[in-house]
Length: 195
Image (cartoon, rainbow, N blue to C red; front, side, top):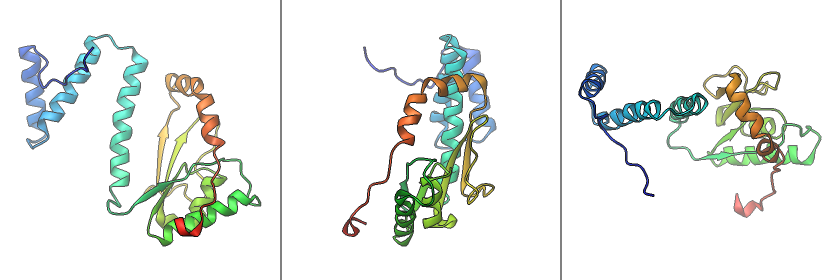
């Protein structure tokens, strides 16, 4: 089976005319062909009777891609590093102190530090790098943590993915094992020569 090819037309005259009018109404530019493709693909998904949950995931993916572009385009020329780690790591733990040092070292090299904006290792990395050198990408779960106090409310540095929607919660529940595995990752000390 070959990969599906994107189409710029839906194949029904009236629908294609309406798509052309819609694209023209927001201004013609060099990306119109790609915008048409995205619209046609969305209509094809509906015509293919893609399940509602899958449509929600596809729709939310586009929203999150746009949000990511808008957030990360603020610093297009700065390298970025992502810190994963346990939200349950206490400030007195060696890993916590290591995450502070790592964040500080990355900021000194003018790198932006991206974390889940939560407590524990994520908070430590933010603390080390400084909020001005940090992006916090936090998910919003019902009855769960919010962004770490160090970054909460700073919308320039904090982006939240809200998954309170009931169907999306089902997806999260199905992937709980993956979430637990990601949360258990720990920072590994790097020799200073590697920093």
